[in-house]
Length: 131
Image (tube, rainbow, N blue to C red; front, side, top):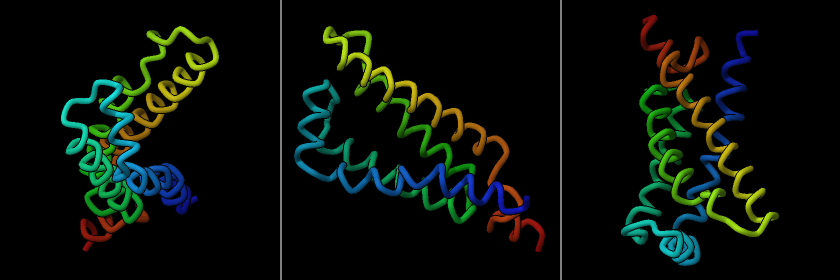
């Protein structure tokens, strides 16, 4: 059981390790700008950096609470700006956006749990605190 939180942290964070790769592309920046993201050419790559740093922090369990807050700061604006399912008229597109919206809400919940409880016993934070 001692590996449960470690495995959970890794599984939770994998998406945020992969996310930044696409956020430096001109297509992602243009898509965000078309969705109304202000300063998309700056904020989209910055959000990718935040997601990546947050994910690495959570995986290795070093300053995991701060890493989790970085994930929250990434997810909240992305969720509400990029997945506005309530404004989509096409039923299939609306369903896809609602799925993305709910997925992001769930991941925000997971990040908030890590922000509160920390990384657990199999982490650098715990090793530093114990020594």
